[in-house]
Amino acid sequence: MKNVLCFGDSNTWGYDAVKDGRFSWEERYPGILSRRLGTGYHVAENGLCGRTTQYESSIEPFVNGEKGAMFCAEVHAPLDYAAIMLGTNDCKDMYHAEAWEIRDGIRNVGRCFAGKGARVILMAPPPMRGLKESPFYAEFGAGAEEKSELLKYEYEKLAKEQGWLYLDVGGIVTPGQYDHIHLDKEGHRRLAEAVSIMIKDREGM
Image: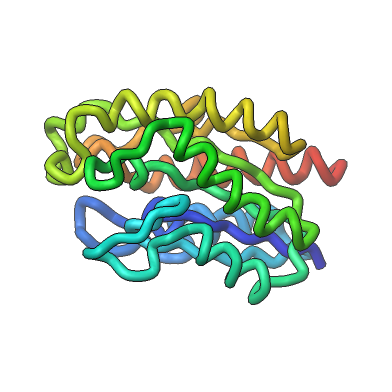
């Protein structure tokens, strides 16, 4: 049995921005990934709304991704794959983070899983565009879009340095039109398809 962990923020958790709720297991990408990989694979998910790569929040508890990864790497061991998608929340004004700092943060997250033998799939989150129309604009601010655009370049370089698999999610999906941050159902489907193809290719399936 191959074990796959999906580790991330609200887009891994399956936040439904339109209904302010959560997509069902069958609708969110870890559940679809589980179905696409089929028997022989166990897919677990650990998504948390507001999660960052390395920052603490005075508003939302437990969002430090590095601390969460240290815990999850132990809980879900042994892991064959860890699919990591973080960085969107780091772009919020409150963290004052530059793209290279976000890259350094996710490096530590990835190492938590790689150190336990997992093959890391580093996923650059889809860039945010049109944030001024989003109900979350006040949290992110004017510089968030530019930072989110830079993450794919920083993450690709990091993946090459670390020998990790890399997926530019923005090349596959765009955030939903309601808030320009969160994936809609079609986005979850496309993401799951891309990750399943990456794993199957790696496994020679």
